[in-house]
Length: 240
Image (tube, rainbow, N blue to C red):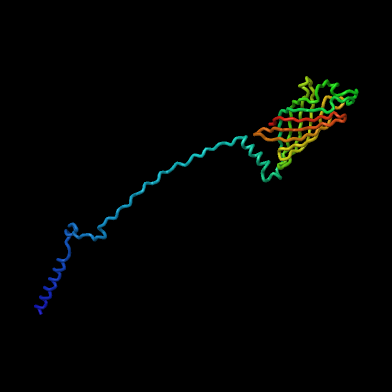
């Protein structure tokens, strides 16, 4: 029994000694590792190049220009005349003026019996020709209807007979219509310093083309007279 116990003790001691020999020592962990790394971990993956950050562009500087009063008024006037809401817009008002040059012709100026003294207009005023130059100035007030029709109120003063060394003034006031801002038609009163017939009716018609910011009116007029000394003529000028 004692021999059996001794044999088991020796066997157990040799087994524990083998296990202790198989464990690594404390200094074994300080030695460099001799195990070769696997091929999959040996290859070093290239590091992607870092792209430089884009430069920050400065925000564009927006310059602000104050619109001119003339441009603003021009746009407003155009919108008020031609805008879609023109029918509901209030009537606009425009005043224009300018000089006039023209010609006039007097019918029957040398006919006897057309004056109270039995004479003629030629003899009474000392006229040398029925054709006379006109020089004058005109202003008109346009009431804008925002469509194809405007209303005109016209006033002008003229002097005739300067080429015959005569000074024969006349003044006219008319009211009429303007169609499509180009064709005008009106009637009114004409006043002259003739003591026998101070006032007459006058009818006028004309066309006014636009040249830039200036109008160039071309008008024809007719002044009837009960004694046959009818007057007719034409004027041209500039209006601004």
